[in-house]
Length: 274
Image (cartoon, rainbow, N blue to C red; front, side, top):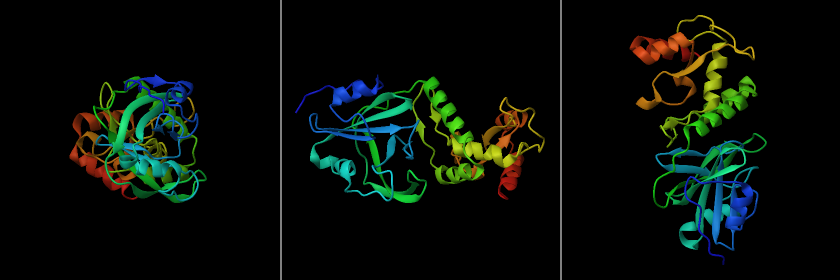
């Protein structure tokens, strides 16, 4: 077995460096290495069908298997499930920028794996296994604010390419009461791009508050409206279809300056009919 020293948390590696360091496969989201007795897991936020998310410093990581129901005994799902007893060290990388792997640290199971429904690679609903993982020690490395902003832009572009029905389905499936966060120069809430895109399309170019048309169209011809959480995320609001409105810039600023109860009630009543 090869002895090795993992990179410092927050370090960025390319795929060749990762493969050489851990002596593992160059492909896949779960990469077992017998030579280093490690399991490398990758949470790819740029290109992935999986719904991985951080909640209170615990990563809820979707297991292995892209087609049909996942099995807890399948390949590296079993390795990860038994990692508290099998002696295999589990190392987590996240991808925020294409082909760049950010090392987060060594992780351990925070709780028992559980099942939930997610789509497979062909878009069909199936059962997956989700592994709650936390850092073995230390704290999560801060990700540059610009990196997270660029990731959000990529997600927004992906959302705009989907049909109305696809966006609504993703918005309703991925919207959640307990909103994920991660440490940056400032704490950013990891909002669902599908929820935001659905709110804009549902409005059909009309501000949900003042009921006036968007003040202008963007270069791509779509109305310029901004998404707003009726109950703010920082106050415990949910990132869901029912809590997200599309507002003109003037009304959006008004909501953030006044946060008027009557306006919140009016938005909630209007959106409850959709």
